[in-house]
Image (cartoon, rainbow, N blue to C red):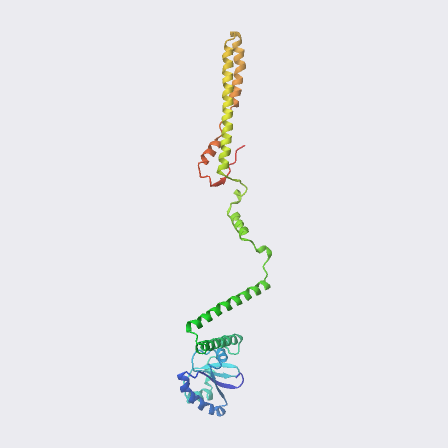
Length: 290
């Protein structure tokens, strides 16, 4: 068909329009020698691959072929129209079939395979219904299961081919826990990553211990003040000449002891206020000033 000049008809035995065109086409074949043209007709039911190459979607379909150039005939279907189309070379005014639909291309050869597959499945369905007596739903169930299995097998093969051609690097594979830790680390601001996170229970215990130490220091200071006041009383019972030196000696001691009394730290109060929150919440441990 790729050499010389051809007129090719695609038909089906069950097509009414094809049946009405059959005698005209047979008469045209008798004039093929005078017109220097070859005629042919293709049954799409017996040649699904060839009809797939021409991508026949309607019947009857007529193609004009000359030296590998394909054009679809869409004129009247009578004897005079066919003869004038060839003799007057009216086919030159028709646009050729596009490159992607050229029957001689690779992509259309693949399309022909799908046409063959559809024809095979149709015959298989007919065999299951007539010869084996399966119900319609049973035949469709078998086709559905087969489609799923074939899809899974082809998908597995495709994944194996991709892994062989493009093997993943070991560093690219991470477990779910590692990925989760990485995401958490990215969410934490950089200025807070070095701070310690402690439970409020632990912070509360620390505050209580510091409070006990402060109470003990206060008691010791109170005891020292009492001793100082008693010493001053006893010093008052001495001679009047000794009162002034005693006062001068004892006064700095009291001042020193009062100076030794530590001021209450505001940090402990802040910690006690923070301990009123729920114990399950984790927060940053406050830093003490120098």
